[in-house]
Length: 296
Ligand SMILES: Nc1ncnc2c1ncn2[C@@H]1O[C@H](COP(=O)(O)OP(=O)(O)O)[C@@H](O)[C@H]1O
Ligand SMILES: [Mg+2]
Image (cartoon, rainbow, N blue to C red):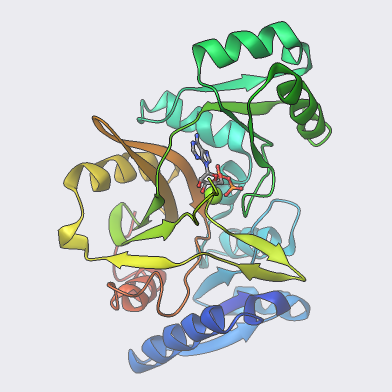
């Protein structure tokens, strides 16, 4: 019997699918004999009293969720997500650098500075990487600061806009596909696989924030044992390059395998979506949090 605190923000419970996943999670954890409480910001001082903290809120080193993660870590409380993973994943330059260092397969990726933002360099990148070219601000999430550019002029304009938010931005080869593949990985093992479908005439999964609500495209679950072993293998390598916690690895299929588009900490879990073909995921998260499984 343990005490689990789920750290949430108000917006976590505005979407019924997200709320549904939290209810499913607490039901499972209670069935396993644990006490489950929701912790809002004003109750953060209670974190040290818990055995484990499960963060379900946007994670960013500048958000209270990071303070919750650090407080848990400093007090020896097991936590998803651990602060080191949050720190790495919330900065795409840092995250891709970890993947590169570990030799994880990914689209060709460069980090650009102000001096790269001229028409000549743009033309060169269209030639050496791809046209269109994908530009990303390091702290993008929900596809907000990820854009496709097709001319050197566009490259300079979007690049300059993104550089207002950071001192380096990411340029990446464009990989065409009908869906993003997502592999959920916990403690170095695959937890679930799903496809996020890209709506027709768009190139990104339709995930954005509208009036404080997160809007997503259709999600299709894939049985773990039906997933391509190369997909799982690449996802596990990517997770290992970051840490030993809970990650959502986004991948795309290419001719000779899979490339990693992003490693997300705090991956979305919506009832009926990520858990579609993985009903065991709530139990696995609970066992991990209680130190019964995946101890590092
Ligand atoms: N190199 C790429 N080629 C094709 N599509 C991409 C590429 N990079 C990102 N995308 C699309 O844009 C979406 C958002 O990019 P991502 O790097 O995941 O940023 P965010 O953190 O904002 O989600 C991805 O889910 C994917 O659909
Ligand atoms: Mg993403």
